[in-house]
Each structure stands twice: as structure tokens, then as C-alpha cells.
Length: 280
Image (cartoon, rainbow, N blue to C red; front, side, top):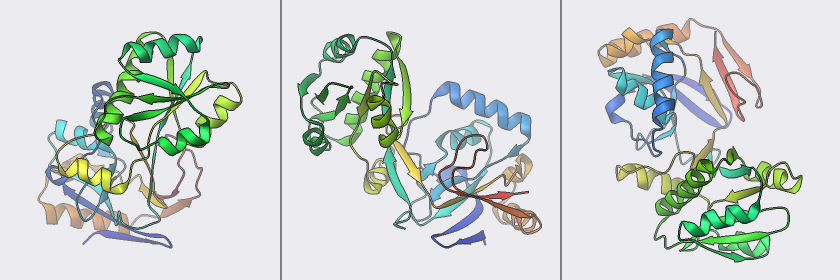
């Protein structure tokens, strides 16, 4: 039986699940994985559960932790099982905002990749997102352009976004991953040269890609969940045990600890948009 946290908007089920059952939906970045493996090995505990759709075992948040668990040879991994169909769980995308100079140079980089650009009004451009062949919108303080490429599905769209991102990084541009609201605000205030706004991703898209054994590009989805558990701090040796014994130890450990609730916007290792249940 999992350790259950009843939040007004969501039920959180904390348990230890077999690593091999989990399905990721975004690619793994090797340097991030290496740092995480070293950190977990040094800590001797697995701090935070990964967020997982209980019905399909698709990982919503924590791709690199799953990869790190496999790298460390762990049989089990701390998970927070949720009902992904709960309307209080929302999925958004990350915009790519560019720091640097010379918008014309950015446009040349995109064209050199074989993509086309067409001027548009922002409202009209936003309406084109999600159409076949539309990679995204490039928005600066004085221009709005639709980026076109021959993409047949959303996974291919984000591969094209990744190509643009990689090409711009190689030419010295800094890429910031921002929410749509923050990206628009930073363009408007002149804090960034431009922002790329990609199409939306649905829960069905996430499940479909993961269940096919495929992955989106890194930083495709941004899941916002009403609440999440933190610092379960499961000893690594428990994660090598038999399933029932390990989960019994987890239950006993979590039941004996005090839980502090922190409001949305709290900063721990990063800023969290959701309420946090911190085990002490």
C-alpha cells in the first residue's frame, strides 16, 4: 500500500516502484545525468519522488532521476503516483528566449537550417500554432514571424525547435527556458532579443509518445501539479530490496516523520509553482 497524501485537489500516492516499469517521455541530457548520478551516490539517499501517471506509468516529472536510478543499478525508485486525467494537473510548454544581439543573424541561422519564415500579427500567429508544418513563433519587440518546416507530427516539431536551439547556442546565443507569460514579458521589456513560442502539448501527446517508447526533445513539457511530496530521503539500500519489504519500510519511515506544508512559490533547490509536502 502506498503512503497517501490527501490534498484538496489531488491524491498523492508515495511508493517504491520498479524502475523498469516507468516510461519517460523526454530525452536524457548526458551532463545532467552524470551530475545527478554523482549527487545521489554521494547523498546515499534518493531525495524526491518522480511524478508518475498511475494508469500508464508514464513519468511526468523526473526523467533524469529515472535514468540515474538505472545507471546506479537500483531495482526500485521513489514515485508519487497521480491520476493524470485529473483536470488540476496541467501541461504547458517551455518557450526559448534568446539573449544576444542582431535579430537578422538569428533569422539567417533559421533559414540556413532549411526553414521558412513569414511575417504575421501575433494574434494570427498564435492561431497557427499546432498546424502541420508550423514549428513555432519567433517574437521580438518589433517583429512576429511564423517558423515553417515540413513536420508531420508534434515530436518532429520539437526536434526542429531543438535544431534551432542548438544552432543558436553554437553561435553564442544564450537560451532561457521560460513560461509563455514570462517569455512575452521579457520580449516586451527588451530583456531578451526574441522568444520562440512552440505549439502546445496535450496529455494525450505525452502518453502517446511514451507508450510508443519514444521521447520528445528535452524541455518540451512543463507539468504543473497542485502539490508534490519532497525529501522522502529513501536509503539506496532499500531500493535494492524486494518490493513489499521496501514499501513496508517506506510506510513506516514516512508515517513517523513530520510533514511541513509550504505554499506555492517556495524556493528549495528551485522555485516550485505548486504546494509542497516536505518530510522532516
